[in-house]
Amino acid sequence: MNLRDYLHSCYISEDLTSVIMSILKAGKEISEKIKNVDIGTAGTENIYGEEQMALDVLSDKIFQQELKSNRNVGLIASEELHDEIKIGDGNYAVCYDPLDGSSLIDTNLSVGSIFSIYESSSFIGVAGKDQLVAGFIVYGPRLTLIISVSHGTIECSYKDNEWLVTKDNLIVSEGKMFAPGNLRIISERDDYMKLMEFWMKNGYTLRYSGGMVPDINQIFLKGKGIFIYPGCPSKPEGKLRLLFECAPMAFLMEQAKGIATDGNARILDKVIQSIDQKSPIYLGSIEEVKRVQTYLS
Ligand code: AHM
Ligand code: MG
Image (tube, rainbow, N blue to C red; front, side, top):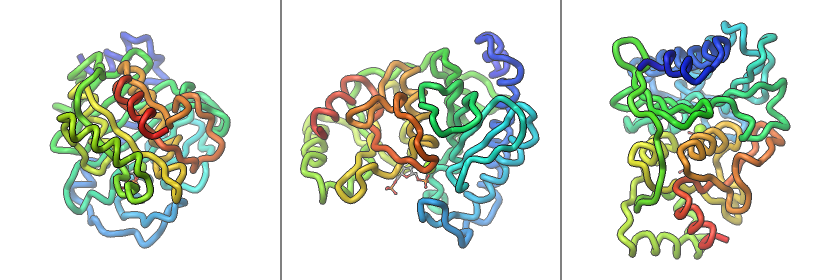
């Protein structure tokens, strides 16, 4: 089945379908640019003070172009922009991280784009649970997509010029696999070291590339495991952005029967107070996330 037919079977409106298709068109274009464009830095910084790669800036432009040409989109926000931008009168608000993990590009590891669609006139005041659609595209050896329109989480693959549903009803249940982000903070947190020891002494498999998209993609496809990026005294909210990274991943995970918390609150209940808001995140199978909460309380 192709993605359009799938969306139709979920009673997704033509307008919302067209927004999803615009995002995927941008993704297809970005996948071509990754193969062909100079991988150097752009000489600029984003609002988080991080150096932007030329491809970060280009990917953002591609997203903007596609979304501006869709009359159903009224608002956009990007991890690479300073603020949300009203771009038209459409009902839908799209936020995205156009190229997550771009510091991995030079080593030719997988990277991705993360996106969410809301129906709102501002992102301030929304919560992750208000998302209508969330997804991410993986630019790896294959071009794939994990998406949810609130009917479970599915995988699609780009083949013969279209997106085909390659795995429906992805479920994340218990299993021994861990992806520990920000392991450096063991120098600040003994409890994180104890959690690592638990996983290592109990025969868990370490699977960590340093890219949130491929690391979480793996959890969906293997149907087990956990990804965490905790905070620490020097960075209490960690690194990952609530609107652009944590909320969409949490939505996809809950739709796959897993959970996502910041250690105290459900990620999807957290209200966006600023576009650049960060959050710690523990995301994966229910038992494993609970275990992390016990260790890192
Ligand atoms: P980015 O959006 O600037 O690429 O940063 C997000 C990435 C995630 O993919 C990954 O989980 C994390 O940064 C790794 O962070 P660190 O640099 O602290 O290892
Ligand atoms: Mg990112």
